[in-house]
Length: 282
Image (cartoon, rainbow, N blue to C red; front, side):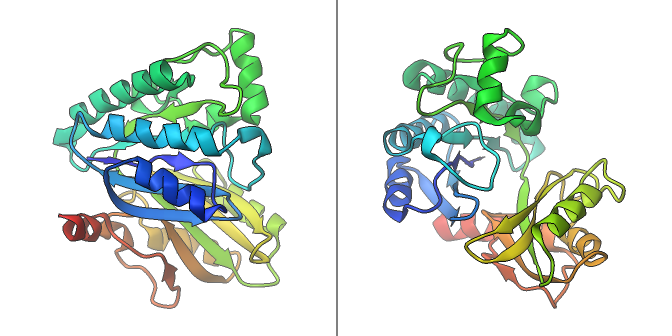
């Protein structure tokens, strides 16, 4: 079983390392990005241990990060923005759901964070729905009685916002850089076209288009929620119909099967699979 806490800090390496150490768990991977201003940690552990490990790391994050000073490209509503528990087989789904509920209770009770469930534990409610408008809009919706946290206080944490928790199968966070002269507006238009529900909608794909100031290039940033329905090769092919993909980037780890048929002419930065990482840490 995995936990994949996403923290709203991608520039301060000392803070990122301290948060990673605070988890006191099998840390399979850390990915951080200064433009997104975000770090993604991948932890492995047993039911009963992962929720406590995520809570330890979250406590460290709260001492080092203030959401109201955060400026980054990635949508977020909290210092510990999302913290899904990930099951690697259908048989482990029940245990992952139980662990996610324990995590929500710990984050709410011990750290005073309002916790919102998403995905299957919340009737299919999405991250995008909860992030719409950012922390200020979420706070307004809570105050107006339109939304109520599933755990924790009925108001945003003063410096840490809120956190989203779920139990889910592996999701692939996958970014594709575009060759010049592609612009940020080009990336936004491509993302709108290829995401699920768009004119060329790919099943289970969430996408946004960005201009990365640190790198001075356009990027299509995606979450592929079902790599069996949409392999990463299909994402690249869809983008290629509009612009030239130069480099792909894997954020965190992905199942090996997600790369079936992947094109040889698009290198993948940060390539690592869940299977390889688990084998190395055994």
